Length: 331
Image 1 (cartoon, rainbow, N blue to C red):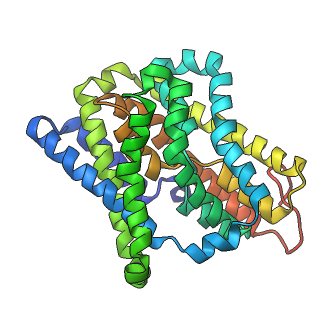
Image 2 (spheres, helix red, strand yellow; image 1 turned 180 degrees about the horizontal axis):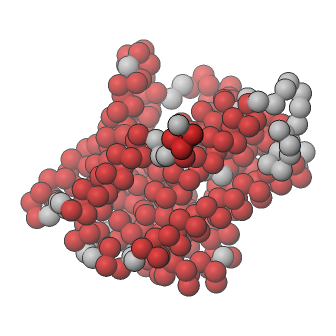
Image 3 (cartoon, rainbow, N blue to C red; image 1 turned 60 degrees about the vertical axis):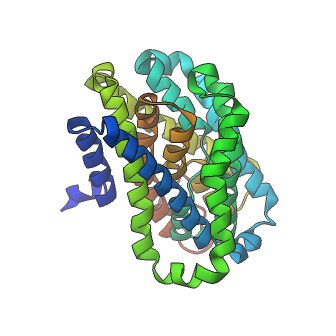
């Protein structure tokens, strides 16, 4: 049916189910402690597998396109934060303090890896450059995101000093990633052969973090603090925020004279934010029930960006060879 095109994918439906489960049956007491330990181990495994999957040859192949990479990093780590601050007079009254801080946290995150590459590939963009910039964005985010959190959110969003936060993220995210890269010569072939099964490990890790975070938030009174009207306002804000970013990124690409393939890579690399990195990182940066509220904008934005970028990627994919297509062009 045509309506099924507008439904969330199966994983997103499961994600929503996990949020509902945490609402009805949150982990508490010793159960919460056990889930916290399991979640930490799952996050380490998640980034170990990311390190094992990442091809060094593909990164080297795209690494020379420094101009495009700088533009993608500027959109991810400069444009987003500036918009988050500039739009505060509009966003704060609509969202309130906690959800606005969640939007600022969203703005501080690195770009996605898998989906940015997948959409660039579907849209026939510069795939090697997309692989390189997406991987580099994730690694830079380990160091830049805590600094941006401090600058954007101040002491309200920060747990401990910035150096402590970076150290915790390095230990929990970067060390497993590097271990995965070092283990790649030994297990890379096995990882490639079992990529479909291992994707469940990635997804399961995220589900664990979401359940743990939302359990703490529900016990702390999350849904009493966020009425339905505010949740709908957040969805509208995330949609309009993404639309604004897409238009600005497309404008920047044309303004600096990038060709069509590089503009596609910039569009999908510079407009997306990573839930796979953002949710585990929030678990390290923020304390207790605050995590559930702070990651809510990210979860909504992530689903919207997937649906919108899927449509855009298919639109670019349908273009004849040599034709130029933009956000406002006829297809």
